[in-house]
Image (cartoon, rainbow, N blue to C red):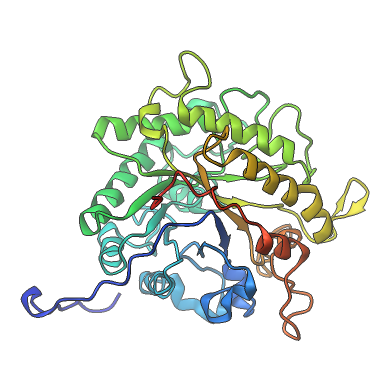
Length: 397
């Protein structure tokens, strides 16, 4: 990061804090580095293509982008976060602990940003149980990372859960010391804890979360909120009764979300499989990724997967479900933030070539740059409204 930094004496320098955002609304979007790389991204500068999100994030991270190689350095990562934080709807993410990923901000660097941009929700981390995301860095450094999530014994995830608890505590305490109004959510894993379901594709969610929560309990730590992912035909939700490679299965995702919700509330059974429910009960739950992880026009049940099919077969049923369940008095009332994945996701540099999730695009990459159009999925997300879905939640009256 260059030479040592020199600061003016505090008595001579009084930074003006950035305005504190108001209550976070319910509807978010995830703006990917792939979109940024080709100029397709939705951002404040282009009014988010009219998507009108209440909040947005970009993972605070960018890789394999020839136009932004500086982002692979700590300074580049901090620059991405600071650029986003200048918009009051931006939700910063620490993609991975700096202990494992040298390009990630340290707790103190995150705290410095929190001090200048107060009142934000901070997301820690991104899929630390996935060896293609944050888990890649953790797996390189620590031998206890399960080599195969599908065949791993659920107990094999305990070391990772403990580690994430330790790292969460470091970031939490430092950020909150700098900005007591900040909220720190954890930890965006692939695996949901699904205590009431069987036949899970990755069966370690309960063990992973319990080890994380046990570490927080042992340290006397607080947890401000829960951040999770939920995809059809994916390790996050797949269980007995779901269909593999069927990307239009909202019922499967809804069953998984209800099971996970019961885990966090401690109402899954008596006794609950979550002995630390005091930490998670009645806490905000944000789904920071939901969508369809498939390529545009991929064959699904003998028909090409178009944006209209994704809208009608998955997005619209999920939106209707949220409007019934994620409201005060609903059966999943504390799910009060949902972010669609994503603006655009197709990595031209990734091998194998299945890293193509364009069926879920909010933005129409086929007509770009001649036109800036929303896909059928994007138009439905733009029009989605649920005035009470964000409450109870951070900043609610």
